[in-house]
Image 1 (cartoon, rainbow, N blue to C red):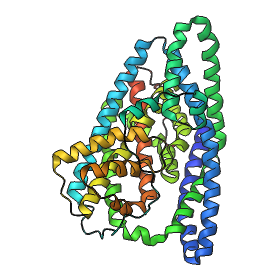
Image 2 (cartoon, one colour; image 1 turned 180 degrees about the vertical axis):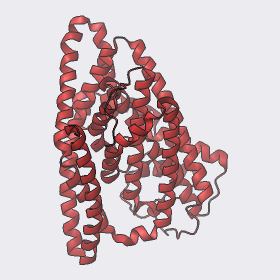
Image 3 (cartoon, one colour; image 1 turned 90 degrees about the vertical axis):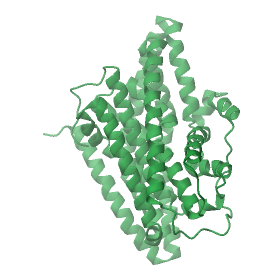
Image 4 (tube, rainbow, N blue to C red; image 1 turned 135 degrees about the horizontal axis):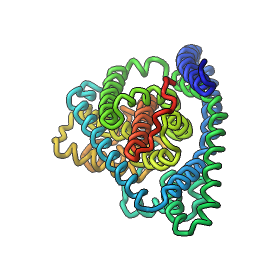
Length: 419
């Protein structure tokens, strides 16, 4: 007989898939019904998705703080933190480099921008213009107030405070550890139980998000950019295979059990295009695989800032797509320099809406690419963002499991059946 946790997870996964399909069907019907129906669908989607994301976001800050502090504090000393952090940052660098090269090679081979009609003017595309300033980035990393950082859900600032707090615990003495560590461990457990409650609303949010997008854009936009979407999704598929192969080198055949357990958070990330919405569920699924909370609580927040494989691939792929659409030749050396700058600059605009597009807007002028080309991507960016987020979820799930294996703390007896 199936365990209750497994039955609930399987039921939620099926409900999310049904909600995705139903959202497409209803969205197409409303799109055909006329502007009034589309406006109503948009308002309904905003309500359903907005409520769900707010419920999730209220969990993020205390969950990240609790899992990081309890994880680092229980490691005992800074040496172990540096060992785990150094290893996983090396993994992030390799994964990001793999993503960059995959995006570059695919864009050069597939030529996704050839044959597109370019816009005559940039116009106001509703994007915040950002310029990467190393000094401002370093200053932004350190919070002036942890309460302000938590209020804004600034993950990077919360991570910095929580890491320092966790490192200070052993220095404060055994008494402080005995008082704080049980409290943060219980707080993390409570946040995960709250996550269970909130996730029952996930299928409703998925339906609203997909229904609203399809009702607004219709099937026409998918037809117009179908070839580009297929090429981009196919490139991400290649990256998924490469990331799985990398992880196979560490986990062996268990990587396939992990991939099955990650189906639900990947679907949720794909449907909502929100990494925040996936974080608590991802921690829960990794726990089922056997990754200790203190490992996932340390690795995942770092990954959300430094291991965005799907977003990094999109930036290189998207930039070359725009260059090809405008007939601009970019030498290989300049392509490599461009994507490395993008990887760095993306760390400075965390939390900006449509951050991948903002990064392109910030970097493109430095390499002679017209900002008007962003209009080619903007119309379908929601569908691109869905795939980017799903890839980010997969990459960070793999990274947490790899870190647990390297530390010899990956449980062998955990639940590994499909989600």
